[in-house]
Structure formats: structure tokens, C-alpha cells
Length: 436
Ligand code: ATP
Image (cartoon, rainbow, N blue to C red; front, top):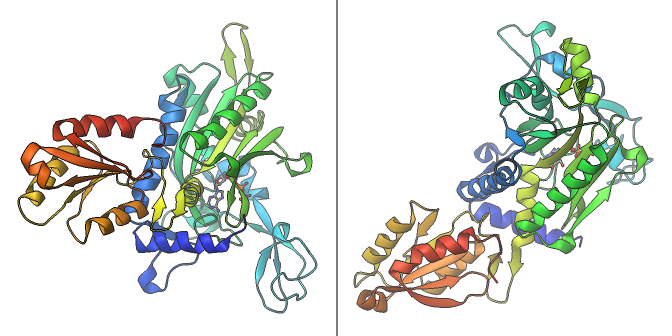
């Protein structure tokens, strides 16, 4: 489904309707950096909330945490990032463009102008900065390139404070930074992004089963929030594709307008990370198992997802052009605004009544009041940003306290008593499926 046109339309909708803006736009923008606007921030928060709900609240064996972005530099030596977190970089001698060699189908010439390419060299993706007032080698710290290491270094703290027993996991959402050689495709590949990661610690020997469990669990999460099944797939890594420490790995991939691309990786990282941290920190990171009275280093299954990438996938997936309207068929749980309230006319008490409804609904979920333009235009505006319900106050409301509720996807309208509005919307918004 390579369809760049759709991508351009989504990007334009994002800008026009306040989902995503270019960073520092009034200064000409900063390459590959994006800002979430008033609607985008709601959508992304809802995506993160849906993830946290499913992996932390709905499970009795996953704990949350939030580690700092700056960490002891030794962490990145232990993890292998200082030594090996690099991509092969090549330059075109003619047009001077830069590429990631592993992304090129033909490694001998420039995909843009056909020019000769330089030899590839390894380029470390970690951003460096300095801690304290003196910029010398002793004060170098790194902006974390993944949230995972913040979890490994807290393994003991969680075991000790939560009396955690295997199998258990630690989940975290947070920013990560990578000085990508070729960022692009809007928010798909950026240099600053947010990850949603779980490190799930298991007894060695049970790791294959848990990989199977998490790969299905995570795949189903995207379906649960309405992503089109045919545009999702799980792809197992070939042996030569696996990171040296990984025993097995699956990617959840989505068919974006620019092709199938990774949303999330689910890897069996064995005992690599905890063993490395035990060696470098000289702290005992083994786990004591009561039943067998034995000590060992747990294996770890890592489902590692991108908050920005999944937000983009939910946006693209929900984008729909119909004869008379553009509609974002977002799952109600993800929709930035849950209900819009309209007075039919700007007179006869309609605005006051509509504002009364707004006040009634606002404590429960995000709503918008709109009294401008024709009712048809107001519906279209809400369709375009994915608002699942529109509530209209009209003359009949003034007579018998009933309102009409219009559902986004079917465009069906029902008239109900005002007293039944909140319970009905709460029930529908909390339902775990998209409206029919
Ligand atoms: P890629 O092969 O696309 O560079 P990766 O395999 O290096 O990705 P991981 O290290 O497995 O990615 O990171 C886990 C997740 O973090 C990815 O599946 C993706 O959702 C997200 N992610 C990684 N790099 C970026 C980036 N530059 N911009 C946005 N999201 C990213």
C-alpha cells in the first residue's frame, strides 16, 4: 500500500487541526523534531494510557517506574552502547547526501543521483552532553537512547521493595534520544522520541513460553484499540538479523503508506543485560528462588514499543475519506475529544442549555463546545478530529429536555432525555470496542 499521498494528507490534517506541528516553526523548524499540539497531546496521552492500563493495571505482576534520562556513564559501557550502538554511514561523493548503508538496496551507488558512495563508517547514535560546568571528558554523560537500561539498573530495587517474585515485569514510558542518520517519514523516525518498554524477568527455561505470550499480548493490543488487522503483522527476525545477545525476536509491523515498518520489537534478551550490569557494577544481581533454594540471573523478555510510532499508526489507520467528509475513525478511548456540544441556534436559550450540558459532561471527559457555523460544518469538523459523539440542543430540547446524540462512524442520530446523556456516553466511551 505504498501511498505517499495519504501520508501527505495526514501530515496536513495534523498541522491544520492542531495535532502535530514542526518544532520551532517560527524559526524555520528543526529537522526531524515535532511538537504535539492541543489535540495531538491528547491522542498521544491516550495511547500511553491505554498501554499502561493493559500492561500495568490489568496485570498483577508488572510494576511501573520512571527513571531519569541522564544516567551514570558506566551504564552505557555495560549495556554495550558506547562500544556498539552505531549505524553504518555512507556519503554520496557527488550530491553529498548521507545514508544508512543497511537501508540501501544497492550499496554501490547513491539512490538519489547514482553517484559514487564513500566507504561506510560506524556512527554512534548516542547524544553526548556534559554534566556540571566543565566540559571535559570526565563530565560526559549521555542522553539515554532507550528506557530499558533505567529498568535493568533498578531490578534489585524493585525486587527488594516490592517483594517481587518471578515472573514479573517493570514497565516504563519515557523519552529516548538517538542521533539518527536518516530521520524521516514525519514522526516515524525522529531524534527525540518516546518509548513504552517492559522488561519481563523470567526463570531461564521458561523464556520461550513468555516470548510467545508477550508477542501475542502485544499484537492483540493494537487490535484492541481498533487497528486494521490486515495492516498488522508479526515478523520473526532471521538469525543473522538478531542482536548478538538476543535469542529470538519478533517485530510488530504496520503497513504505513510508505511500506511495512516496525512499531514494536519483542525480544528474548536472555540474561545478557543483568549479567553485564553485575560485572560492571560489581553488585550481585542474582535472584533467589525460595522453592528451589537456588540463585540465578533471570532471563528477560522485552516488548519495546514507540509511543510516537504507534500514535502515528493509529492516526494513519483511522484516516478515512468519504464522499462528503474526512473522518478519523479513532477508537473512542484514543479520541482526543470525546463529545462535542452544539446549540442548533445562537438564540432562544440554546447556547445556555448547551453550556449547561458542557458543564455536566466536562468533569467526566474531554468535551468541546461549538456554536459557530452551520450544524453540518460543525459535524464535519468533529469527524475530522475523530470525536465519537456530537450532542445537539434544539427547539425540542427547550420543550422537553431531550437532546440528539450523533455517532461519528454511522452518523446515526438518536434523541434521548438529557438525564440519560451522561450514563449513555460513559457506557459507550468505556466500551472496549469501536462503535458499529
Ligand atoms: P529501527 O530499526 O526502526 O531503527 P530499532 O529496531 O532500532 O528501530 P528499537 O531499538 O527496537 O528500534 O526500539 C524500540 C522501539 O522504539 C521501536 O520499535 C520504535 O517504535 C521506537 N523507536 C526506535 N527508534 C525510533 C526513532 N528514531 N523514532 C521514533 N521511534 C523510535
